Image (cartoon, rainbow, N blue to C red):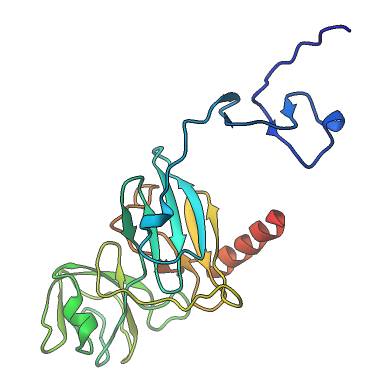
Length: 249
């Protein structure tokens, strides 16, 4: 029997759902304790238990490799989301929102929000998101603040507002600015989590809560950044998510 050379033995990997005689060159029908990566094959280093320390029962998990080469596991539960760094779990659950108490005019140097537990827990300084992307009124903007009065609800801005905003508008903590965890409403039947990676941006949904995204900072999601409600290009993100899921089935 003649010997046939095989090149690029790590280019395809293991394919078990195709008969071996139909496999392309470079593909393998089975393997044990090996991993195919970067056009090569190497021995699996081993396994490590991580779910035992997860702070909640995980309903859905997926890996995430950052542009800088950091490898994370993201776990989704009934009410929370957390990221495993390889050593510890970090809570990245979305934060509770605030509500404007009174309309805000353009060029205002402060805003007033309802008092309560969310305001009490609000970071002493930080960034807030206010407004929406569509229409001419209540347009979206990000506001940095230098102080907040938990008794009166007054938040002092470092600059001024660009647009006017009506009473009862929702105010979102942004970036590393925190209030309190805002619980999700997921389950394992009708509100199941799923997620996709859109060129580095993690977008997740359970079909009930508003779609979530993990904000990028210089192209990389920071562990100090909590998930936020998808704001910009929601229709595009929704369509991309559906397309991803369709090709994953």
